[in-house]
Image 1 (cartoon, rainbow, N blue to C red):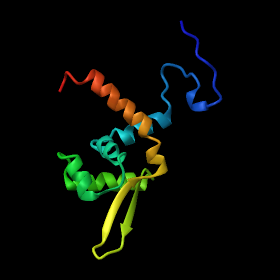
Image 2 (image 1 turned 45 degrees about the vertical axis):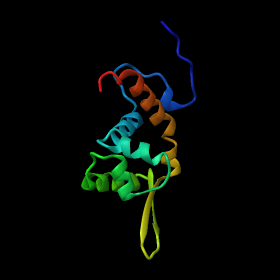
Image 3 (image 1 turned 135 degrees about the vertical axis):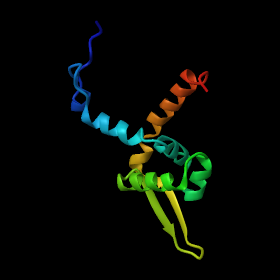
Image 4 (image 1 turned 120 degrees about the vertical axis):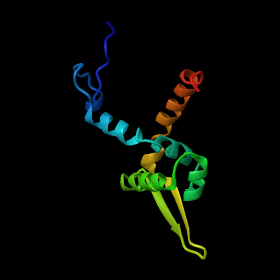
Length: 120
């Protein structure tokens, strides 16, 4: 059996097999919502207008995109910036908290490309 290293981070402490870290569960539920990962992935490339996000995730309806953007903004993962006009322009970008997801999302993309590419 492999020994685990001790760590001072309580979230990374070994736990019994029947428990799940509540922070992990909340993060997976938030990021794993339908289309959320795709939205975050396209925003990794920089600020975008609502319609640009919609075009980058073609099967996503405007209604669901609006709902997800409101959720992500409320959680502090996405920032909404209004540029006064005319014409009025609204852009969405990742907050510092959202940008910290980049390594996890890139790793997930790499994993999917490696293991799921034959399933497509």
